[in-house]
Length: 275
DNA sequence: GTACCTTCCGAACTTACGTCA
DNA sequence: TCTGACGTAAGTTCGGAAGGT
Image 1: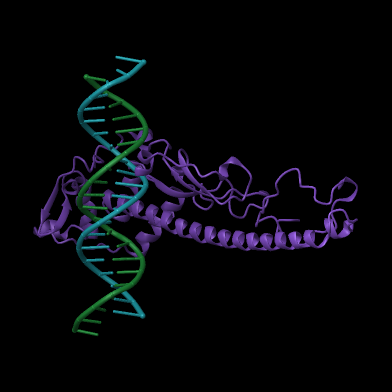
Image 2 (image 1 turned 90 degrees about the horizontal axis):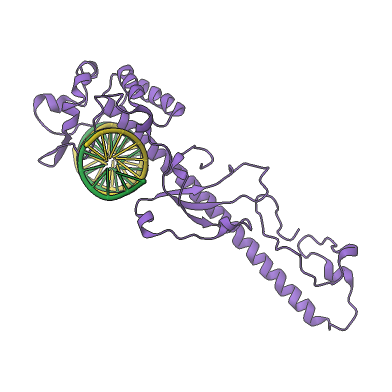
């Protein structure tokens, strides 16, 4: 997906913001219907990684995609009877602005009883009756293990969640939340990286555009200075102003002949669009 | 076969707490 | 000591997918 992090959400329907780095149809800005945009994932879709030197014309797009990856539930359905954690079915209780999830008490308290005895965190308010939300601070060891686990797989199935929770002396819900937030942070970070990347591309393209405009002006001025019927120096007319290399050769019949195919600038492969 | 409902899950968004400069 | 910024744990809402009827 996005080069660094394999995110299955990138597949599927996309709103592609192309940067016209290639001449492929991917450069076309494809609007998506509002219904699709409603639940969107702002991602940058790059078929190839940033550093792919083998890709002469990287396709850089900013895509709104719809997730189509197989749902985790499919592979682990009903493995975990404790994981009936539907937010829809969860009963939320409000008490002086503090909110608590009832399901943490009902569903996960079973396994939480042993773990919370060790950690004695995140449930103090549940035990003494107050509803003040206390902020859990994970220990270094817990964070390290979670990170390690996240590196292996960014999503957990219930069994993995249970095992990890037990190992960390946390509730499965806490592990789940940590992974959710971790995925969100990863995505945010990647989005920032992508944003910077797009900015740089935009700057490069702007510079290149400016240079080409200037080049065009020079050519126009040259054309006006030399009457068309006068014999012109082939070297002057076929010289690339960018690299000052003589072009054409035997195949160059007309000094103003156009290239058969538009030559798009590729900031990754060529420093100059003309050469 | 399909329309509807239920359940489950993840993403997105939001809130609130702890830390630190 | 106060305060605002920041990081992050946790709550809420919503939509999609799958299974059952």
